[in-house]
Length: 252
Image 1: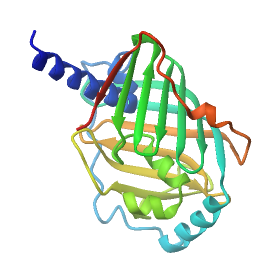
Image 2 (image 1 turned 90 degrees about the vertical axis):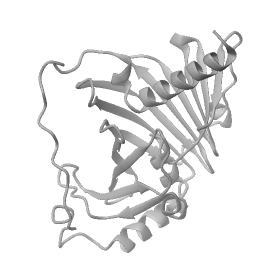
Image 3 (image 1 turned 60 degrees about the vertical axis):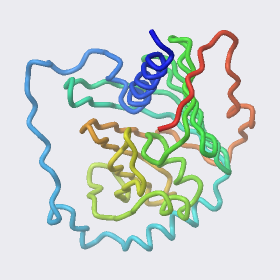
């Protein structure tokens, strides 16, 4: 195998792992019956995307969000994630904890079904896979999962700078929440095409996100037991590559 072949294989492996971060069902697990077809989800039309008459104006929601996040210094919560891979017709659940520290540090600890650590810092993402003895290092893009909550915690200006935002999605299935539709302004080969974000009506903290990528895969993350402005040490967000672990670095 030539050096070029090895480099190509590493790029493919990186693509798969980043997709796996967004949709753990790519990595296996028990899902739906592959032999059964599923009814396609009808695409939303302009008529079905009309905002509710009682919904507040988008500017008002963003203004309230901005006031809330200006006061935010740190955040910790549990999360539950459900991922559906369209091509394999599989669903898989994952859960863990998420941490945020201003100005731009975020960490996701996946505890079930397989341990993973994901670090977002500035324009960099690191994914530590202990079971594979690998670390993935990648330039951060707004089309990656987990980035929308990070941009949200950094303030509304950061959010609207990265996403086109509208309030044309329904929020009936999430109690006491507003729903926003986020579309990344910059899409790349591995991209989330659209993100729905539900924020609480009282504290404007994220309650749930639902993302859809270019392949039709969906990932839903629910945030539970959120705590704000609690002491978090900077060391929690600093990752050191363990000895003997393979490091795969690339950009697209």
